Length: 65
Image (cartoon, rainbow, N blue to C red; front, top):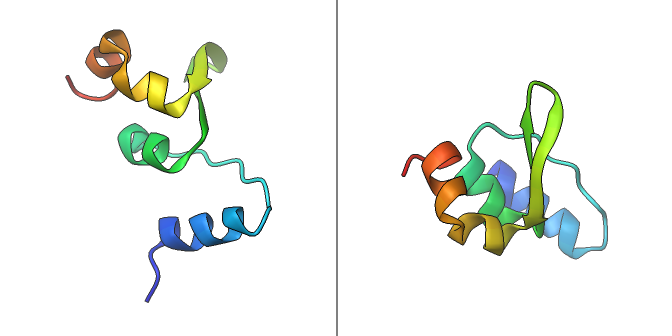
């Protein structure tokens, strides 16, 4: 049985763009190509997912260290 992320990855690989809103930021960024950080409904940070995952400030503030 496919997990939700496996199914979404398969759909995305077929060429469909997906907008994903997910509380598990680390997992979502591993799945996504781009990421957007929202605070109080405003985008406060955006970029390539791999860059966000490796940013020390993003790690500290949103990814638990």
